[in-house]
Image 1 (cartoon, rainbow over the protein chains, first blue to last red):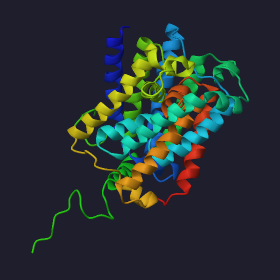
Image 2: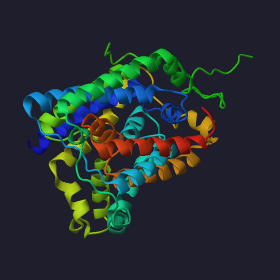
Image 3: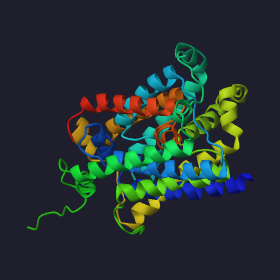
Image 4: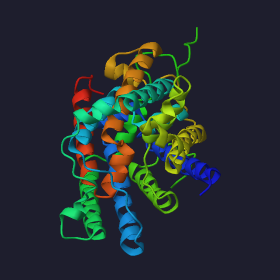
Length: 205
Length: 171
């Protein structure tokens, strides 16, 4: 595909991604951190719904049409330590790398600081990759998937996991309805400490 | 159901829409959805303004030219455009920074939030690059491919996030 079409395709797919992140409020810092405090389950629900959809889509693409998968390597040191650092960063930034862009698009000015910090972090990693990689080089197992470990084809295991995650979501939704979390997310958009802003009008005489 | 002018979509609808994006990603770009690599692409170009030798560093060089990273950089710009469009169409444009930060950390000025945001962004991408992916690449895409490493990465992300959020005020 030429660069022109790659860019156009990326922009179009990203726009769909961005609309979904804004409409679901998953890009809200209060919703992301709220998930880590078990106060709001919007992020987990969106994340698992996307995972289930991906599992089914890839079960069909790979199982029926032989489309190649691209699982990342399992290197215990990097995914464990990197994952922990990434989690700390999500809570401090109130964003993931993708949602930081959605926040900027929706109007949050602090998202630009997150993006700038992210670019600086990526540059720092690129210049220091040798010693960081050497320090974390333990436990490398290659590009393994659970389908490699179990006597099941990828498509079969993908559909089983999709069904299990869907069952979990049904139970979770019964316990915590999404609309209630959405109302909480909406309330978080209002400043309660500072009276100026939306809905505020100066008292008459 | 998928109206642009509606204020909300349920997290399930949003998740299904995002999950379906794997289909064009695999069929047309031969890769999975991801976001954090684009920060290396941006970082490599920024660094090239100060350091003429950047493209000699193998890690940076591959992110500056490979097709899938060009596609991913367009994808994240598209995310910003989509969120802008969505917020505009539903009259929910945000300003300065989320009021949730005042509740979580007590910050009231944009300046202090910018400082914490920058540090957060730095830690975020440092972690994502060490892990080799973020909530999209390891999370949504890795789990959908049953990747063992991605499952460990997601568990570690939640652990790091839960521990850090526990130090903040309850929202």
